[in-house]
Amino acid sequence: MIVVASTNGSVGIQEAVRVLREGGTAVAAVEAGIRLVEANPDDHTVGYGGYPNILGEVELDASIMNGRTLETGAVGAVKGYAHPISIARAVMERLPHVMLVGDGAARFATEMGFTQQDLLTEEARHIWAARLKQDMPAETFANLAQEITLADWVRLATDPERAKGTVNFIAQDMHGDIACGVSTSGWAWKYPGRLGDTPIIGAGNYADNRYGAAACTGMGEMAIRAATAHSIVIYMKMGMSLAEACTEAMVDLRALNGRFISVMHLIALDKDGSPAGFSSIRNKTYIYQTADMAEPVEAVRTFVPIAARWG
Ligand code: GLY
Image 1 (cartoon, rainbow, N blue to C red):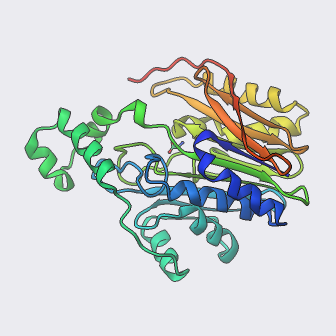
Image 2 (cartoon, protein in one colour; image 1 turned 30 degrees about the vertical axis):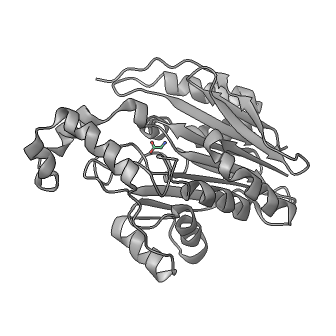
């Protein structure tokens, strides 16, 4: 039994391991760990306290995948609910669909009894307003909701330094079943309705008991373009080791042409329970904990450079 997570999952990994030790499923462990990250107001990339879109609205994305059944659930651009991972799990378990977005996702969350909440903290609101006011005339800022040229402002205001956070959890339970979950508030100051890789199964999340699982943090558009999480699992299916599969996926990302290339970080697990982490930035870490370890280990991700370019 093991749980692997991005380092910001440290507030939830012990809870996920506790679920596994008590005989819970990998799906339950992943959800339990991610819920604690979503509730952490100090994490501005996930859940409550996440950075808002350009209009100052917090829009959340999440997905979960059961590697035993290959069932998945995802939500995108959902507003007013702090735990999109639980809504995603309910989509997987209660609906014949795999993804809900926007108002439909919020409506479903209400039907399922999830609690509505204001997700924009004073700290996140202050940072959002200060960043936009750096470039925008006061009148534009005051009338943002009516502003019809948001596209230009998104290009100007989006700060690649604040564009990349997400939380990843992968768990393998006592039956050997694997699940993978991802949750994010997406890019800070994004265009309303923008979805990254988090809710896109095969891009930011994929799990298949027969081979392993993978999840991404970083610039979601890149993982969508390269189908990164699914590629890693398919490379393992083709016979590559975990390290070879992750390296090959990073090489695929490096081969992306065109504009808007930034950073990518991966975590992955093979079917035998071995973890890995990769990053396009040196010295980035990930965490993992097996059921017989008292505490998680923080390990350095393997560095594979990807040259950043923007415009
Ligand atoms: N990786 C999260 C996002 O791009 O939204």
